[in-house]
Amino acid sequence: MQYMLLIFDCDRPEPGDPRFPEALARVNAFADECRRRGAFVAAHPLQGEHTATTVAVRDGKTLITDGPFLETHEHLGGAYVLDCRDLDEALELAALCPMATQGTIEVRPLAGVPGLNHRTTTGA
Image (cartoon, rainbow, N blue to C red; front, side):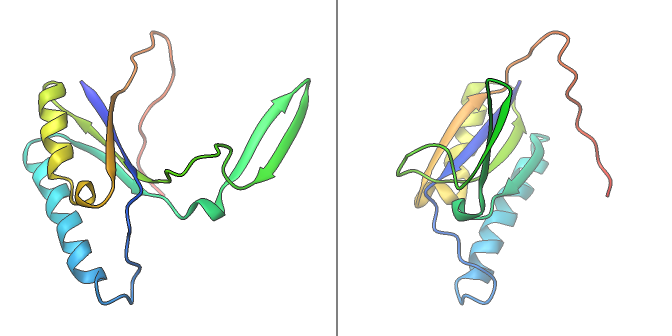
């Protein structure tokens, strides 16, 4: 079963920050452990919420707004998609995620929707 690990409220040092090499090593070690278990599917950090643009269509009109839609104190920083045996393994890996020590990891199973045409593709 595939699970998404949503990473909230994590202080992520940027390249050039003296903490960056150590943080990157921890994140890469986590990804390597997920790969070793055969669970790694994908992972992507997000740029800050100040870069977000929100799109909504109401009464046939497209509304575009700078910034995130939700008024929340929690900020989504990125996500992993893991293919785990069960929820217990997904939770175990979430606890190993280095961002869990400073933020929050929400673990959610991906929904299987019959007929939904979503495929993972690779390439440039």
